[in-house]
Amino acid sequence: MTIAVARRAVLQGPGELVVDADIETSPLGPTDLAVLPDAVGICGTDLELMSGEMTYLANGFASYPIVPGHEWTGIVAEIGSEVGGFAVGDRVVGECSVGCGSCAWCTSGSYHLCPRRTETGIAGRGGALATKFIFPSRAAHRVPLTVSAADAAFAEPIAVAYRALNRLQLRRDDALTVVGAGTIGLLTALLARALGTHDVQIVEIDPVRREFAASLAFLVYSAPRRRTPRVVEASGTTSGIAVALDACLDGGSVVLLGLTGGETMPVDVDGLVVRDLTVRGSLGSPGVWSEVVDLLADGAIKPSRLVSHEFGLEDVAAAFALARRREPGVRKIIVRPNRGGHAG
Image (tube, rainbow, N blue to C red; front, side, top):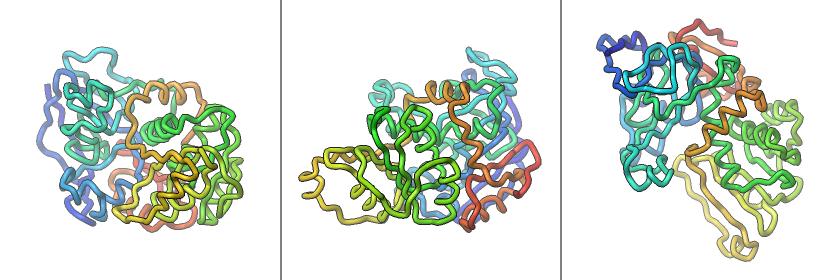
């Protein structure tokens, strides 16, 4: 069984993003889904792929051409002969990391570290910035049609934030500091509140981002007002890491979510030891997707309020350009591959 991909966005190299017609048909494997993408988010990783600065390009894990789009939702158009649990017309979301399924990493649940993994829209697997694409059913998750496309498109970054809070071992009565009020930082704060943690301070240096975060009823500051036992660093900057470490209460824990693009920084190791801090990285979103889908289905988190702009697939270059300019008021940008978008 085959299905043709009509149109797709392709990164052919740094700064080279085109909308291309795919005249060949792609095989639909027996365990695959053919999906019509409905909403696709643009994130910092996509911008790094666009600029050529993404870490995976430097270490050889990823290479051009790349069809981006790892934050997505879509409608199932066709199912493989061996697929169970899905039907044509289902709304689905999909994981970024897709492991081989048989190595020690995968069988232990750490498939995001599988040395043979692909990453949707990043490395070895085309993403959802296309009118149709093929996706493995084992990495897909059904979402009720009552969840809007704009909300469901956030499933992947919500899963990243959820996993970070799990690694932080956040409890309801813990005070939390989130450094950075970009998409991941705001989702982390919203998710923490949805899970019952109401003592959250956000640290953000950009005044426009501070104002928007405050509109979501968070305490937002340009510098930490107090130390808290749990801290998430979501800015992806060395200065943000320094703030996160300083904002952590002695004996507390810090989780680092952001990538700095290879930039390094000195760390006061003696201070980490004397203050008895736990510092952990968090990569990807393994093993948390069922909980995230439940939160979306229950309406516990409404991430679509972060969307500021929508574009159609034909205007994807303009969408990337707007995201790169980081103008005031530009928050989350989503692309509607199978609908006309609007720049506003």
